[in-house]
Image (tube, rainbow, N blue to C red; front, side, top):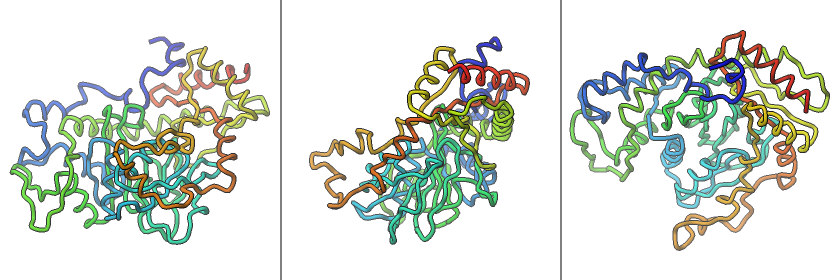
Length: 392
């Protein structure tokens, strides 16, 4: 692949560049043993090894592997033992899966406006709020609200991010959800991880994710007399094996992103109508975020970068007040469940009807960083990006 090609459209994002067949020791072992179900063998499964490794790496007491991050969010919500129709406060700017996880759990999302960092504005939460999902979008560590018993962190886009005190994003609140989707920091195509520091909560999550069973590895599942129903959210050995291989490269990915971001900051833009949005030290630098003076300039930059083959994206698609899933309140249930349980009150918290947020999104452009490039190539990529942006 030529340097010009590598500086243009990125073929693979982040951890996908570190997928390497000779490095897939766990996957080779699972296939050679012909056991791809984590509870089939009495020996420690690859999935259990992944959970132990991830918990140690993230500094949390317990980790549970599931099919995807949406399931992790649902499982976290259900483990709080809610009542149907209970409210869950979520960011107005996030992927629609967050709202979907709330609704598919029989709960009602309340859209909360965001602050300048595009994270949920915790100052808008009313007294007595019980459940909040905080999204660490674009690797940015969001603020955690005080006095909320069930804070669930959506760290799908922030694996490896840390709070100022060194605590990992996704391990601060009641529970944390991570994603291994193709476009995330690490990938297995799909996949999810759920974390908690409460052993009783973990036990509830573990039972529910396997039909409510009291599972003993190597044996048919059993159910205690007080068992409740559950679902099948158990991940497979081959997916866990790929995730374990990816975790071994997490530090390489994070270091490469940090270096590329620092290099970009050394190449300042010689124009006053665009600014690089600052990132905190603990953020995962998945992209450089640019804030333009107008949407017209932002759109011109999108066109220029796209024409040149340089990967970029905007964030307007994340505005949930405008998304059909939340705005339309449609349901496959004949009675409109769970929207039919929604209280007769506004389900949004915003001081201006999201006008400021729409303006921020309209002027924001993201350009992904490339941890897999050498320092020399990252320098060349920074020069190319600066030249393109200054020509807009």
